[in-house]
Amino acid sequence: MKNIDITYFAKLAHIAVSAEELPKFQQDIEQTLESFGNLPEFDDVKIEIDTTNPIRLRDDKVAQTFTQEEILANAPKQSGGCIVIPKTVE
Amino acid sequence: MKTISIKDDICIKGELTTCGSKMLANFKPPYNATVVDKLAAACFNVIGGNTMDENSSIDADFALCSDHAGLARRFAMANSLIALKPTYGSVSRYGLITPAPSLDQISPIGKTVRDVAELYSVICGMDERDSTTVERDYPNFCENLDKGIEGIIVGTAFCRPQQNILGGKMPPLQKTIPIELPSIEYASTVFQIIAYAETFSNLARYDGIKFGYRSENAATLAELYENTRAEGFGYDTKKQIITGAIALSRDNRHLYYDRAIRGRAKLCAELDNAFAQSDVIITPLDDSWTVIPNLTGCPAIAVGGIQIIAPKFSEELLFRAARTIEIAGGDSNA
Image 1: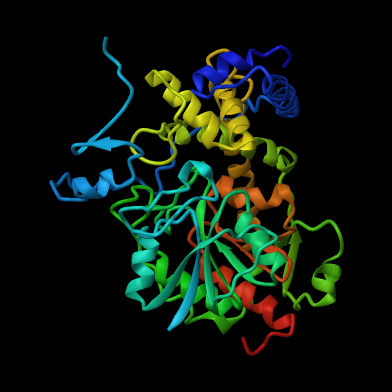
Image 2 (image 1 turned 90 degrees about the horizontal axis):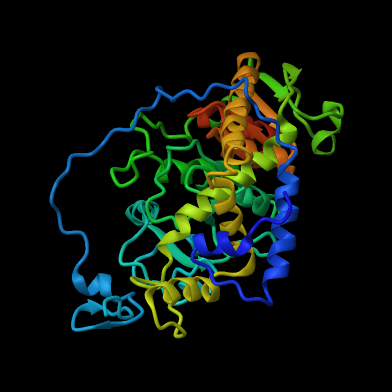
């Protein structure tokens, strides 16, 4: 695949790519996609759900998992028991 | 007390768990991975923070390592150790920080097959906090180790004659048959596409808000996401994420992700067919064969420089086969 719009897909992935980085991403990703190009369609394969080990869902019970302090301890920026983020509403 | 070294992508409460990434450089999990709780209950002395790439070593009796694309098995091979990639769903992944949840597992590593069987006996089992774990009876895997593999049919994926494997130390096997997976040449590509797609989806949580690295260079929420991820992830991770976005996108998924999912199903069917003819399969530890257990969910063990694969939940047989090879290699007292 050639001329794929890396800037568009980087935006989708929420990753800033600078003008300096772009050519290397472009070249490397195109090379990777080219290596994927040998994959057959496998259109004779029917995808079936594995019924041998069905997921067993646990009961939905209210329980204390973590305290507010424990959760906030890893937040990069916090104030007054809340996580601080840039202003989103004018 | 036995000492176990834990790779730094398995959460230990209150201890730095960084995945070797700037993104998690300051991350101290508020909880233990399920495997860490199980080890503590079994009186293991747990040491976190090991990087466990192929160039490192461990200074402990045992180790736990995430197995992404056979990393744990290659680490074991490089260090003359034994590593098990367990059946998918037999070991809880709760607390494992993983890029590709359908492929990655926690692998027990030890100096002998008995070490690995003992460690697996401790960490396996159903876990309510990982809905992919399977409820079943898991035996003590050390009990039948020395029963041998009499009557077992061994499939071999090696092209060269069997007697040359393991430097001529291959044990006498009653019955071997050649095994081929017709689609094995596509295994690495199938693995990469699925891994990148899952990485794109699974690493979306690293946004600089609740935990992990946050960019100082952002005026808006969108900039905060984009700059945090640009600065926090390394080049290879970013490349994989962007490639995953392409592989899953509306206009491209029929070329990549959909084909990879069908390719995975085909490889699973081919392996099932191989197990209809043999009980275990010995293979090289090359790129193609190393990803097969991750793609199919089957267990595999790296021992003596080769890999043995068995059907799902056949770890007991796998350990017996590995033990047979270990003895043939001269380690009869292990």
